[in-house]
Image (tube, rainbow, N blue to C red):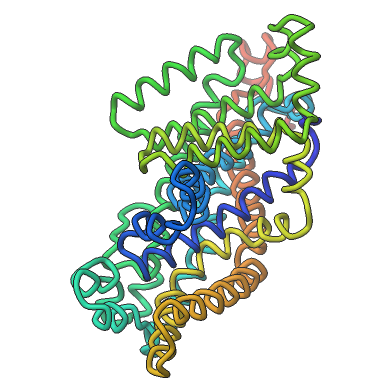
Length: 429
């Protein structure tokens, strides 16, 4: 594996591709109730023994569930990276200080871009540009009485929009009243992040922490909150990545040399990547399966040198840079321009399939543009704002603690002065 101190460009690329997959996922949801059956029908011309493989690979391109699991695993990995890097531990003035800073930064870091996306959706809704219900009524049942028709069935209100973005999105999310349905992940992202900070504070310095990972996975599964295991396994993956020399030391030398050869082989990289993608496409949606495959995919991206190189190219990295903005802005764009453009095409007697392709193409282009704008106006600034806020809070609390400490510390009196109260008066005189 590569040096753990370097920038993880391959994760930027993977995040960017995952964001595009989420966009495709929602496009498919809008235009097709049964996408997997549609794939089977579309690929009838392919030989029977190859059809399941081709359908599985095609299904990966719009599997938003695995993309969300990848987001959570990578988020846990990146948030844990500073803890497990030895140089960060040795340079820290106080153990775990960076966890306090990260915890203070997390809410504003997520809230500012989320609020920007809600304001964007509010403006579209206020102008009457949301056409998801129009498209649902055009398609008829089951669209007209399904999820597509249920969004934006309320009057636009700026106070409710901003209040929902700041509070409800993170603490009481309701998809029926939200201006941006993709924000359902923000609540889990915030809770998962604070779970991660607490977990690291307890287990990061303990030698037997692998047992903690196993125990946490088991307990969370028993409690029915499987999604938190994405964060636990993301922490474990980061731990193994940063301490890879110790992990590899557990295996014989002959195995380690073989691992080195596998790591650089293009044929092995392509073969394993295809197998993982087929497994993703073939499995039915399930939280545990998605998390397991997301961890496996993330590990393979870190392990395979050819795959790292492919994901570190400029286009995937650029998509990764704007991925948060793309994720946040694409749903309002699909419900407004995406639905309107399809209806405009069919009114011009353009066939159904062609109308879908035209609408989808321009919706993706607009989503990429919107993602870049949101990255510049909200996502990137939120990094500096959250850092400044956390620094100010830490400085204020440190100053307050020092003042309280000075006030509560008794004066350093000599034995003689404590025995003779009048001595202080003489010194003053």
